[in-house]
Image (cartoon, rainbow, N blue to C red):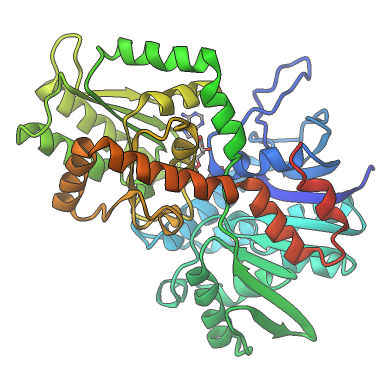
Length: 472
Ligand code: ADP
Ligand code: F6P
């Protein structure tokens, strides 16, 4: 087996099981922040990505993609049900997002979580050369750092949590809270999106494990585990370049014409997830139409909501509710050829997304809680002419970095309506000032800066760093 000096371990491979039968594959990004964040980084170094290919049964053998080895971890139907759909996405996901939906606890799911985490740890141990850096990603795999350290004490192990880490009063609900904390502590460096998350973690470690911990360092079993905030970002240059491509500019103009050349286009792009505040947004929009503040002919909302985790009950309920509401709003306020909301559930390629971002005067991003929200950053990066307004929930991690956005509390319906109107009526010079400031921030804090800062902290020798963070 070929081994690598950098191994990324994530629940999903960056490709899915719809890869062509002849074996030909390309980076096919499943909609989601993790793949978008790591894709530019891994193209730059010989590395292995350990992950699940998306199906069930024996692991398919996949060709390298852009020089990155695909090491597939097989999951059975039971693993998918109890680990991915169960413990990861019906226990941890709602709990870590302020319990906006009720987290569900089942002992069988915990068994599956342990079993699957062990399988990922063994795969990572096989794929890593002596002394390699192994970077474990996200809430699906919180036990992997600890398991991997037992198998391979020679490795540098990093763990990065892409989602929020909750306050102690929520985390304390978890029946197996001590084991989860211990699993993460197998890492040399634990990265979070926000300093508040690192603080929550340190408090929990001190309280649950009775181990001395501050917001930077935890001393455990004769080792030092460092913790800190490393806000993830996007490939700003790539998005700006896409948004400048003549075919993308032409496509944006075409999309706008197809919408009937309205005065304002509002865009939202989400995974269909109850954390994203889609229902709050639709309610605010429909009330603005009903109040007469927004005229359907002048203003159009384009809502992209790609289905996600479709076998998890709360996601099915959400999709039904969203689709019923979109139907109601269009039925009530639309006219023939003039719907109030253009609703799309399809995955788009990057160029089409860039065209959508370029077309939209206002990007509405209203999550109830979000680790980061890369869509908000992608919109800013695509506004190469410094126009456009970003309406952004204060509960998205990105709000801390983009204070020039129109910040909103999505639970406050009146506030949401007022801020949306402020954005619609803003002075263009004000918008330019805000957008310029946000774009300046993202040009410095892009995906390369994120990787550089995380890997510099993890890999003290720095040898890996020079290879993976020089923009190609
Ligand atoms: P999350 O990680 O919760 O999915 P983010 O906003 O951080 O949310 O990341 C979502 C990523 O998925 C972004 O990179 C975005 O471009 C991508 N994405 C969202 N919707 C689509 C879609 N319909 N087609 C393709 N990519 C999408
Ligand atoms: O950001 C959280 C996350 O789970 C990412 O790891 C992933 O890219 C995205 O949401 C999509 O979720 P899923 O892998 O469940 O389709």
